[in-house]
Image (cartoon, rainbow, N blue to C red; front, side):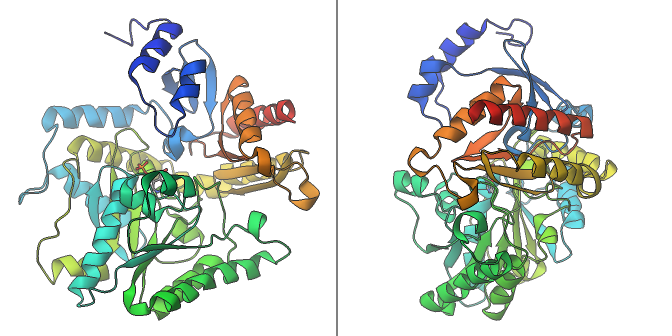
Amino acid sequence: MDYIANLPPTHVLQEKDAAHHLHPFTDTKSLNAKGTRVITRAEGVYLWDSEGHKILDGMAGLWCVNVGYGRTEIIEAVHRQMQQLPYYNTFFQTSHPPAIALAGKIAQLAPDQLDHVFFAGSGSEANDTVVRMVRHYWASEGKPTKKTIISRHNAYHGSTMAGASLGGMSAMHAQGGLPIPDITHINQPYWYGEGGDMDPAEFGLMRARELEAEIDRLGEDNVAAFIGEPIQGAGGVVIPPKTYWPEIQRICRERNILLIADEVICGFGRTGNWFGSQTFNFKPDLMPIAKGLSSGYLPIGAVVVSEKVAKGFIEHGGEFYHGFTYSAHPAACAAALANLEIIENERLPERVANDTGLYLAEKWKMLGEHPLVGEARICGLVGALELSPDKAHRASFEAERGTVGTICRDHCFESGLVMRHVGDSMIISPPLVITRSEVDELIEKAHRALDMTA
Ligand code: PLP
């Protein structure tokens, strides 16, 4: 069936979808009752659905389409690579040109201390790799008891068993019998929801120092690493106070713990620098990446590691028993290379930092004055509106948590805007190529949806 030339009517697509498709992170019963929306086409920052509605994609897909849709440079690079070498692996004493070029390019773009790349197929696989890698590293250093990884409640690090265990989503843990052993969680630096009357800077330090207490509880000889997203995305765009990450770094260095920055969302310009660790002023030892690496055009992830960590592989020798059939998939590498070239040539991180990010922040602050919004937080081109029934007291909807967010999300869609809700936080993460006039449109539609929800 040619779904491009002969698109069936929406109700037929919906029936077929309900008959055979189980959606991720979805209550399938309620989705099937109302029918899925079918997205058929995209260009720039816009999507079109099967009924012809034009929708501004305020989420860049799933925080990933950094260069926008329809980029012929990427499409042509993939086409050429598919003709030349559609698949080969890098397992058995082999490599291929796109893998070689991409590893070098990532090492060049990554913060100074990070210069070796292990490829995976997604962010979850990258984080699974991280778990294996840090344990392999400490074992090869003669410290096999250093196994535990400390993460945060409400973190998101993927959906595989290890990724979801590193994550701190209680609903995911409950369904999966997680976390797997040797992963623990401390509190998140969520000032709006948990900081009470504390000064944000003090609160950031307090939450960072929970890491010290957790290392003491576990014993330094048993702790391998600390992992965190520079900004927690799926947890509701939790932007930490400026004091948080430098203090985490101090503790990791003093206690001989590896520091992992999960840059799957923050990487590749989202926060106004190439990487979130640069915005928040710390230097990780390992950096899982995905999403913006290829802008989602093809699936690819990777872990970028420092010379110190790579030493476990390079100097000590011995096989690392880990890898994926699609590690360094040639077509995905070609997509990533073309994508990185666009980000570089169009200076997208600088554009976010000096132009569109500033413009959006100004407008976002105005949305924060809406009666339904308790806090409007933003960093670069990622932000949240935290909905509140009583903004003076930072109250949350508690008993009906999630309901108001769902209503607002649906109103956004009706208004021609994709915003995601996390509980009662409304989230945006638009393509980095968004223009000022498209920002105006986003804000106007979000405002309308807030009015309809209030
Ligand atoms: N890490 C972070 C910070 C993420 O936000 C995500 C996905 O949203 C992942 C990891 C998992 O990536 P993937 O969905 O590609 O497996």
